[in-house]
Amino acid sequence: MVGRSGAPALAGLLALTGCADGGAACTAVGWNNAVVVEFAEGWRAVEGGVTVECDPACYTDVLVDPEAATVDPADGESATGLLGMSTPGSIVVRVIGADGARLTEVDADLDWRRVGGTEECGGPHEATVVVPAP
Image (cartoon, rainbow, N blue to C red; front, side, top):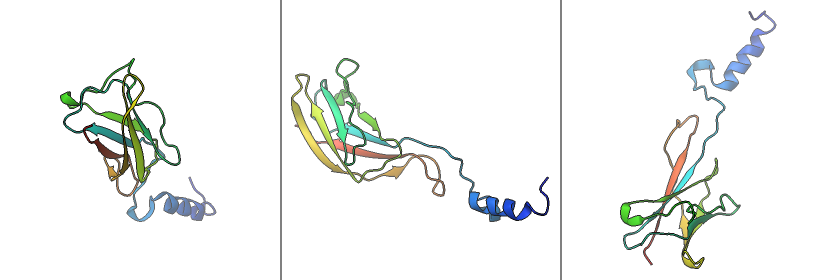
């Protein structure tokens, strides 16, 4: 029970958390935004790797590890990188061959779209990059 002296503090707390006047109450959660790398028609299976890089650094690991998996664009497969809660304006996508040679590099501007959550509270976003055929 809140006494008279605690009522103003409780009212202020409710207003700040969005619970007063029918506002949205957002839980304190985090999510991962994703960049989906798709390959245009004409690509063979990517066996060396796909990397995504942005400034400041958002993801530098190989998205496709040749020892773990390959991406076969002919089967409609793509590579997905998780960027935490960052939504960079642009990224560099590199496709690496099995021998370690760079097959192509694409500088891409990103068009983020929310794929979960709400407008008031935010939520995960996704952007897609299509790598042109070599």
